[in-house]
Image (cartoon, rainbow, N blue to C red; front, side, top):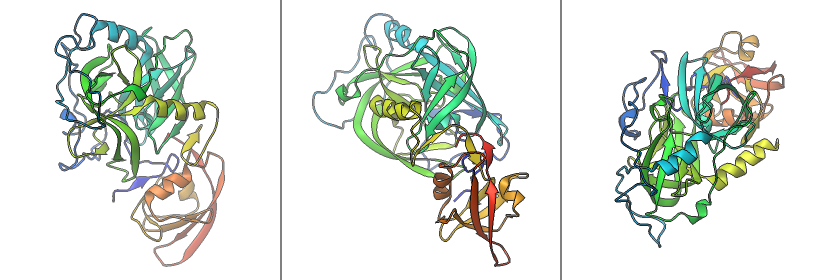
Length: 392
């Protein structure tokens, strides 16, 4: 298993979860050939596709001529996967409520991009958590007014890949309109809209179909090795691209019924083919509502992320430290490469994911008790004060 940098919640210093990354250091790993990524994203790190053209058709229909009829029965079906034109009446309704998100990945030295949906005129935005994970700086350019804002992380749900941002100083923004994902049917025409390729500017729009409902997949990051089970997803026959993550899945009325979740160079969706997936908006709005109301939980983290500062791997009775971030809390108490962390505050640690989930409950400034075994075979305990890091 690849090392997990626990320098955020746990300081995930080696994890690049941003939806689309470029300029990353030479240590950036690409998912193996057996890992199914979307379209041209399954190539060398830093490449991205050019903006799409000819995908916005005139007229009042969602896809113009040739769109597939809706299916009245069944929960799964076969999708053709072909892209259809999306009418200007739909995109003109949706585009002004979107933002292009750009992040700086501090530890990795790279950058990433994705999409967000504006849900209040004062600048509250929802997106995928992996779009902003590992970011030391987040900015968002509002498609509606063209202004760029600094974005603050309000909170996120690591396990369900949902994050809420606040655009600092924003007011009078246009917002997206939500529809009922419960009305979706297999075979129904839909469209995905987003910052495909991380190029910014006018969002790209592609038509497709609903292939299945209520799907479950495993998602994880190539560098970190952690995995989460995403459930209740909408499966799409569409052309999702890196950068689309956090963008809207819309129906023919231009209503948002899901949040697109695409694979990237390091964020993998473990599927059997070239499928696309979206999180239904009822799930997104429920989690975002908890975050806005300040309700933390075993999966929801609010505010700044805490850092321990170790790179770990392995599973079993503890996790082995591969590296320690200089100047981190772990370094301050003498934890070294080769040591094995066995518990935090008395809770046993048996995997990198377990350590991340435990640290997600912590905040900068908190003191935690760390137990570890040294390479010499001795058992050590120390109280460390966690410092601030980027989102997990």
